[in-house]
Length: 336
View 1 (tube, rainbow, N blue to C red):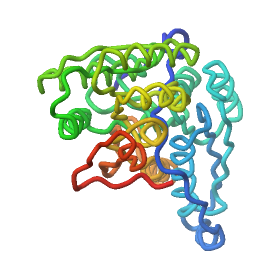
View 2 (cartoon, rainbow, N blue to C red):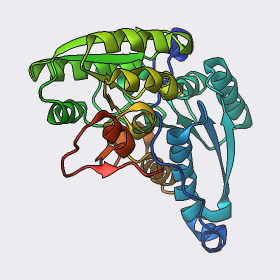
View 3 (tube, rainbow, N blue to C red):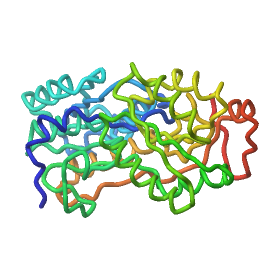
């Protein structure tokens, strides 16, 4: 069983991941039918689940909603949620998770990397499920990664196949020479994605240049520099980028530089295409894991990190038209 290193409490906690964007959450199902069978499903017990979400935006909102819907469908009014948002601040996430521990909740959902790190630092006994986490080994400083965190932690990853994202870029832009990768330097999971995609793109013959911004204040200037030197940009799942897609698009689209995004939300804001997951489905998978732990007594220390059930090629029709990009068959338009 692996142990999460306590150093997560300090330097690592500043890292935030999340994959951002994605499908908007659907409304919660009517509780009446679920409530009718909740007593038998829960064996007469009621459960309190603490939810710490890093920041409000469509991807994380959808993951939280999918999680709540999955548990509510199975448990009805036998489950209560203490849902709190850290507003993008890692110390606030730590305060929230410590509060959950003090309240002795039955399970913690950590939605994004900083909440996961905070929950890991706050408790070694209460089950913690992460969601919207790109790479658990990076988030929790695990060297000998096998797919199982161990201890009291498991969850789901929002990582889409990075080699397939590189292949999609090549499918759309086979004649491009230089590809710029753009992400926030404060997000370790973004660097992980950048490293993997860089290797894949270089195997396909591209020259790859990496550009990082420190926060929202230098997003536009760094994007400008990247656009001046590259034919195409790639942006991984990155919280800061997801919160600044308008600023990125205001530079890249007038410059005529298309962007391949790591997920749907960023693509809708500034990209032309993405290989995307459904964050609602990801949350649903996480909710099913929670039910297995709470009701069926599953041992979280043996639960492998799970992934979204499917990935989909999507494109932004308006932006592709504006840039004169012809999208081949097999891509779905991003709705809304």
